[in-house]
Image (cartoon, rainbow, N blue to C red):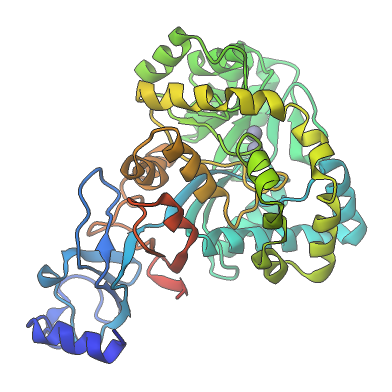
Length: 451
Ligand SMILES: [Zn+2]
Ligand SMILES: [Zn+2]
């Protein structure tokens, strides 16, 4: 249905309303109005879909949402016809890396950036990542690990509308006892709980949105970090795989357990560990698909590495560099433990799904072969394939994600008063979750970024 026909359809139902000025109710009369009209609505709650629905947006907020016949659309409202498709809240990615673009080898990627001229190339890389996420339907994202100045700069430029991207929560450099292969200013080495607290305070004062605490910190380190962060009203995401790290993080008050369950520990976590996480109501962000699904899926379809979208998004030298890094992808050090991880992947994920843990969705997007363009729908598919209902997965991607961010008041569902972060996907994700790969429209804060 084209716009004109749609308008006639709306008018014929008696919904074409009075002139804007008398009908605006609340909100400034100057606020831009936008309506998404006709498609199925998944509002982010665990509720049945609303068919032939409409969403009315004024400025950056949702003002009405429901069955089309119950939504009053003022004359002059800009209309996007969503009929035949699905409307849902923008997705929330709880573990992304804007400094990475799927390149195969950190030992080569960071020197390449230096060689290109970091001052210019690193912000450019982060811009590409942010845009890819947004175009893939991600309207909010947590970045867990990048240099401090660049982290804050990209977040603020996105917020000002200078760069298209999701609303960003940036950790800046992570806190660790064991320095990894990443460059120095991506990580802060700590040697005592007191220093861990001081570094947390310094990052918070500099303006980060979350803290990332790496594996291998002591229980006292985690406790010091959590206390310092909470005093500043920010949350801590722990990068934890081994059960001891998970337990230390859980018991010292770390807010989000990231990666837990994804790395093929043998055996999967003890029942007591899972029970304690569930009873504590502590969210987990498993990042299940990175490596354990991405690797076998690439073996089955190596053509995915030449996805035309990547060629479209990357400047030629960057595309060539990424392609070269992936030429012998089976031998990359990043995948050296993948056999074991694939072996345990089902048990690792199912133990959380079946225990009813609070699960947000995050992907470690940007890591080798884990492209921002598609990481989140791959993660969603892994969860569905392991028995999580598509409806619960969509809640995890939206409403639960907002809770993990502490932003359930204004993000994560489609209802009056919330920020208008909405996507439209082709098809029915309740029937086939891979519909999330086909994001056709992206609205963030009432502004249309993709149509
Ligand atoms: Zn991590
Ligand atoms: Zn990560």
